[in-house]
Length: 422
Image (tube, rainbow, N blue to C red; front, side):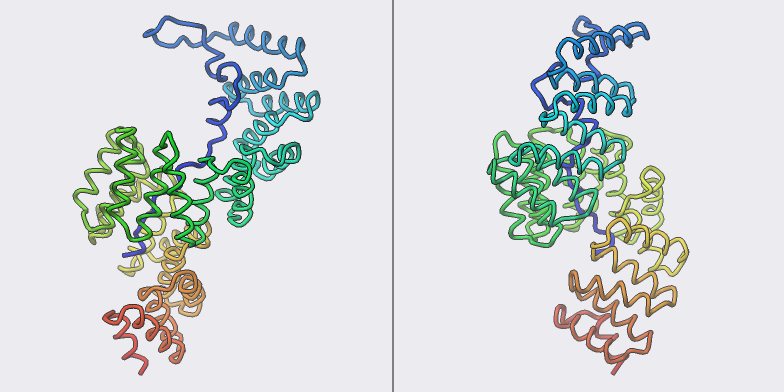
């Protein structure tokens, strides 16, 4: 049942907070570390006092006064404010630094990360563009801008342009390859995505998140055995990798091995009891087996923790539509999923099916036709035909059922639909 299928989520999206604190520059320690006095190994971290924090801030501000031309000094102080959850203070420091060192690419990139963390993606884009204006071949700015355009702005073609520019400067850059591969996958350009992600996965040292991206592409290409091999390679590198166990569970579920899938999801939950992806996987596995009550239990918890979880929204809407119950909530879940993933065929199909079940066939046709245009399948074309027939459009319905039977000659639902409009 395609509507409860959960693809492995992109795993190389950069987190602005982690990017700042992981320190992309060859500079002093990360902001959180700056706040801690040195301690002997094996002893618990000491929470700094207000006086210690004040002293550290004074030291960092003094470093800027002594060397206002050094971008790293501003970045260290910005990390201090970030660690203290004062993004406005951190951004003010970076603006000061940019005023003194306007040609610093590093300052612009860190500024972009913090703006993204602050929920200002348009301003973050402007900061990345400013960095690129200083150096058009800067790979970091290109890749991170591509990630932002792909994941936040939903502009895949613009993202591809950034990744391609990065690869022109650094053909083996894993971040650019991974981002490009994920974008191609989202555009349905599977062969290109496979080639790009295979190269990214093969770069040394291998990176578990990239191996999972490659596994997703292999799974979409109908190569579950190869997908499992890529996931196992990731887990060999990092045995307790939660996302690896979730990905393995997804493959096992989609290849008809629900018990083994649940074992993997439970391994993920053992490592992270609040793993929404693992809970979602268990819920979707139950749903695929038709065990609606346990499926709802898990997926309701997923939505409590993550109200924008597309897979849970989609599955909850689909199950309600199938039972023709709670259709008001089903429509809300389906619309929300479609807002979050406007180009996802399964989501559009679910929304159309909910509308059909609610007795609104003309509205249903709009979304089902869009789903079928993005990815024609016997199931979606049959749903489209049923909605068209409900609306009295028998000629269009006949064409939809015939198209469904061309893809799947033995499809019983399509055959029944065709007999209905003869």
